Length: 481
Image (cartoon, rainbow, N blue to C red; front, side):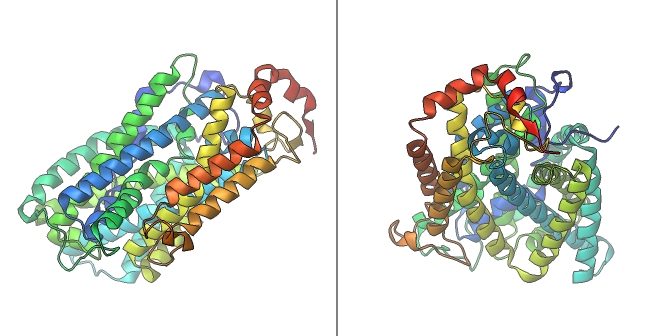
């Protein structure tokens, strides 16, 4: 299979051969991994029992899908990834906001997947073969997983799609067997020696809904376009793509996360997940657990690393996608080492997802407002001006930046960071929300309202411009090299 040559350039119509079923496969197969399963452990680790954990995860996931799934339609229209597509609102240089947000999201989730997968694999090998469970052993395992992940990410979308189709079947079987394996120790009560993380039920439940449920779909706010840019709008309707996205996210996230909740309760996993998960597994399930740790981690981290390569390629247009992917892999692996040896996994996960949700949500809201205003009509050629090292086009705005969109995103992100609560930091706006983390809602509202207010007068012009701008961008853009 040849290495994919496409970066963030426009995908030609003849190469857009994927369909809604492929979208479901990649969203299902890539999420059936320990890096997603571990999020199901968060509610029990916060002190919640079975049903509060399940309702928090399901409610948060459904809310996140309603918000996230429409973003898949943007790249269906633009034939490029979402950060580049956001240049229609932020400007062809301002789209770097989306590239940085996407890079951070993919970096964090890649590191988390390698971290948890590596820990479970070392624990399983330790019980199976007597391999010493030391820092050096874990470091070697992280490196091995990262190396296999790089192969999939460098070869690109087609290989990752094939891997996801296989994983969607194999991992479902492994998880189904795991339900039986952990059944003897299952209980509906929260793990011993855990209490409500935020002191009372409802604040803790809401935190779980955001950190474990909502964060899953939000992780895809910049990733969905990596897949839908290969789907042709001539052959597949936006309605089918939207519902396929929603279904893929729903099944792909709920199945592994609810398995994580089930095993966390069965293994009495309070302050740690990987160790108790391995210790509670019957000996016969260690090999399947080892396979799940290896295959699932490579599949999920491969897609995240692929997205990181695209975002880095968008930030540094002269870099090839393959080179950008290798650099991103090195950075992600370094984060794994730092996280594993310096941070507590629960605190690191909670802080990471809440902070990135706060800064990513207003970007997504602004991008969706733009999609509605232009009715899905984009000038795909004008979106590529920055990649060609040119100037001009209908998305040039002021020196390539739409100041109104960028300021609106900054306002939304700022409000979100001031309203977030994490184990490491609590924002001052929590006093106004009764200590409840409303950063997701407040950041999205603040960013969306600011953007609507700042661009209200020009909305009609912005919506109409792309309809007749196909030739204009080619005449206005001027190469600077």
